[in-house]
Image 1 (cartoon, rainbow, N blue to C red):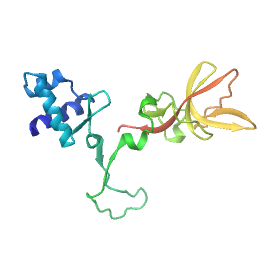
Image 2: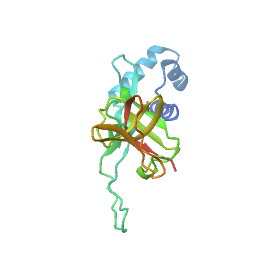
Image 3: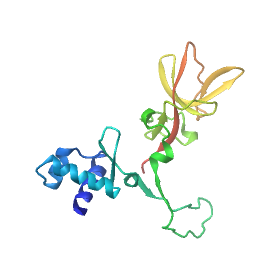
Image 4: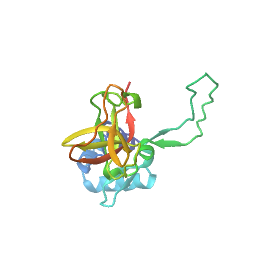
Length: 188
């Protein structure tokens, strides 16, 4: 059982999705879907996987979680004790409120560098979140798409870049806010 569990977790981590019945048959060497069905039910009982409303296998929360060890000083160095008894954290739980309305975009351009958003970064955006002044938003302005701060002055809504080399954007005809930026991912 343990070896099959590890192979299924390895498949999930490599492919970013759970395997289907036929793939589990290949992984385990089982010859019947009934044997796979029983294996999946055992994995559910063990808390390794769960099933969605349609009965499809989905990873248990713990597969997506990584250890949360506490704080690290970004100022003057200080002693940090690694407390492995601390909880785990799911990046999804931290950044995503509405999974069905959340997506990722790759950043192109330098208009948001003073907000810490650089070209090549990934931004996590939520279409369902209601935009408010000061949010970084994804907006369609006069037929073009951009990412900027949402601002309002004297009743007029406009978009403000986070780079002094760029100008504010005031819509000539129309502006539609498509999503609110929730987080930035940068790989080093």
